[in-house]
Structures are given as C-alpha cells and as structure tokens.
Length: 261
Image 1 (cartoon, rainbow, N blue to C red):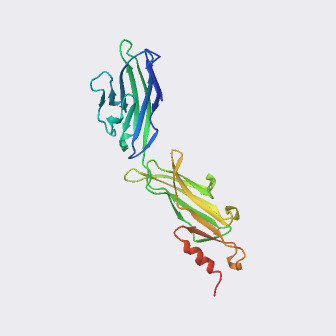
Image 2 (cartoon, rainbow, N blue to C red; image 1 turned 180 degrees about the vertical axis):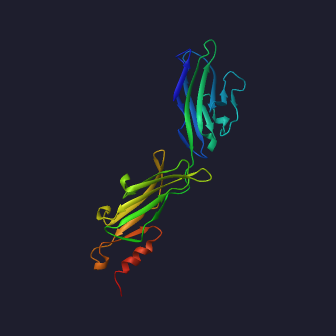
Image 3 (cartoon, rainbow, N blue to C red; image 1 turned 45 degrees about the horizontal axis):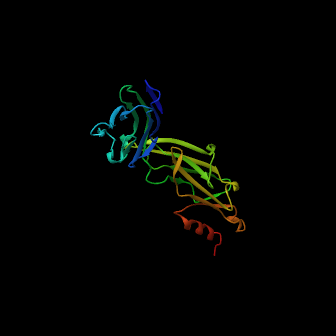
C-alpha cells in the first residue's frame, strides 16, 4: 500500500482493505480507515485506475455520489464514508483502487492510499488425469498427464502421492496455453518408476491438485494402484493395477484372470 500525505501529519489513512484477488461474479467490500486528528472531514473520494467513481461529502445535501465506470457495480445503500460495496465483480473490475481523504479549511490536508485488485475466473471442474495403462509390473516406468480446466489465471498444478507432494524432479511443467476466450489451461506430467516404495499397505494413490494464489481449490478424481497379493500364482506375482474411479471392474477381471478354470 502506498501512502501520500501533505501539510498535516496528523491526518492519515490507517488501513486500506482491497482484496488482492476476487472471484468473477462475487461481491466485494472495500474499506478505507483514516484518522483526522483535530481536523474535520471534507470529502472521501474513491478512484479506479485514476478515474473517480465514488464520493462521500458529509456536508453536502447529497452526501454519497456514484460516477459510473466500467466494472464498478456499486450498492450505494451499503456504502458510506469508509466502505464501498461492489455487488458483482466483472472482468474489468480488476485495477488499481485509491482512497483519497481530504479535510476542510483551514488546513485542507489530503492523504491517499492505493492497492491493486485482480479478478480470478475459477475452473468449473477439477483437473483431468490422462495417460497410463491398466496394469504395470514393478520396475515399469509410468507417465501420467494432468490438465487443468479453463481459468484465469491458469491454475498451478501439483502432483501428490498418498497425500504428499511429489518432488519436481519427477514432474515436467508444460506451461500455459490460452484459448480464444483468453482463458488459460495448464498441464503437468508425472514420470515415476513403479516400485514397492510407492505403496502403503498395498495401495498407492495419485492425485493432481489445482491451486490459485497459493490456495488449493480443486483436486482431481484420484487414481489408485493396488498391489496384487504375492501369494497368488507365479504369473500374477508382483503385478500391479492402475485404477481410476471410472474403471472399478478392470481390477476384478485382472484378479480372476489369475485363476483359469
């Protein structure tokens, strides 16, 4: 937050609340707290990208005035000398927001604070996992790909094994692609050698997590590998199966194939 003061140090903006990121379609509350010392408030002005969109002047007969701007959908009934309430966040709501506080005669002090706000478009679904085979043996190399749904900005993807992050050395980030609507898609592949160390109690669960601004918001449907019991016939020993939630019967078929009639 940047602060600029002139003429009187007793007047200051103590806090400017502008979320760094808001979700498209949500409402948002902006707040500006200030101290006037012994001075009297003349006017509070709000700007987006240096264009004034709201003014609160306590001595005026029409105290609160809204100046329409792109991306600014104000609710005047919920706005006052400290608060600006935006009903619906649009793409062009993103920008630089400034609260400017001015005092009355004789000092006419003026202070202001500025913060930026971005707009996020969350994906409508979790990331998708593709690739892989129905079955693996110990020592096989496995490659899976995780692709995010469309969003803005692109999701940050992370692979997890049994709920724990997989080191970057086992993954390849394929970057971000933009579509015709300027929404973005990211993808990240996973390369692992199938070993017994992957398993906990005969089960290994792989997940792909999509996060925004450092917070996880979407997790893919998990993929599970099950270890076949080594007491089964020799040709089935150390055999593994890659499962998705959409293919539960594949495991049963593989299991009964070990017992020919």
